[in-house]
Structure formats: C-alpha cells, structure tokens
Length: 201
Image (cartoon, rainbow, N blue to C red):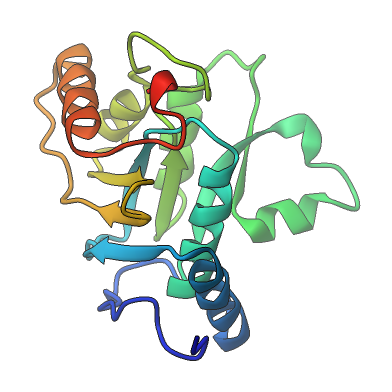
C-alpha cells in the first residue's frame, strides 16, 4: 500500500478555505487509505458555503470526515458552545475552526452563524442535518435557514459505507421551502447512500 499516493486526484478550487500543511495532508491520505476509504465528486469553487453531511449514524463518520479534511487541506468550521472558549483552549478551538455559539443570546443560532459568515471572507461550515446519530423522521432545517440568511450555497456530502466512499455532490438548489428541501434532500441521500447503521438512517 503506497501511502504517498493521493486517495483521489482532486482539483482544489482557489476560493476554498485552506488549512493544514503538507504533513497533515499526507496524514489524512494515510488515514483514509488505512481504512480503505476514497473520495468521489468535486469541490465547489465557493468562498462561503454550508456543508450538509449525511447520513450520520456513527462516530466513524467523524473519523472519515477528519481524514478527508486533512487530505484535501480544507479549513472547516463547526459549532461549539461559547462556554468552551476559555483560556488556554480558546485560541486552539478557534484555530481548529470552532465557531462560538451563545445559546442564551437574544439572537438565535441562525443569526449568529449568519453574522459569522458576514465577518469572514472564506468560511465553510459543516452541519449534520439529522442533529443526532439516532434515527429521525425529519431533518432539522437550520442549515437551510442559515444558507438563506447568509445567502450561501448548500454543499452536500454523503457517507456510503458499502462502497467506502465519501461522495461530494453538487450544491443543492434550494427553493425557499425549507421543510420541502430538507425532505427532498433526505430522500435523495437515503435512496443513493447507506450509513454505517442503516437502521438509523
């Protein structure tokens, strides 16, 4: 097994937020190859977007995602409670891409994340629409409301365990009907991809 070879050749778009270095990219490729996963699809050339990652049913999803982030050199942001941002960890969490969210603030989470986008030239934020690893009947629509508020695309990424492929799909064309879009996206994902625990999908 040659760990120096890329998992797959990807064109890195100039607008993508960059992170890591040559070593972290190599480590990410090593991780993906060691567990037999590959990447398919294309990265959008967008400075700002929200990533909807599904179907999320296992902690393994995070490991695969981290290998992907490292191997491609993407800087990904994610949500954290603001209480976690205290010395000496604040700088570290911000460096990792953490976005401090104040759940007690007058403005809701959607407004806070939209404000974060407005103050950053490049920002890709990842969310799991299920909001849990348990089986749900409906996806949460927060990621779509954030996309509308911040006027950014929704980039869809799917885990497919039978093929051991992390599939990067085209950006979703939203309609403004958040519930309908979430249902259509969930139906599309469930029809094409299989989670680690399909019974929770």
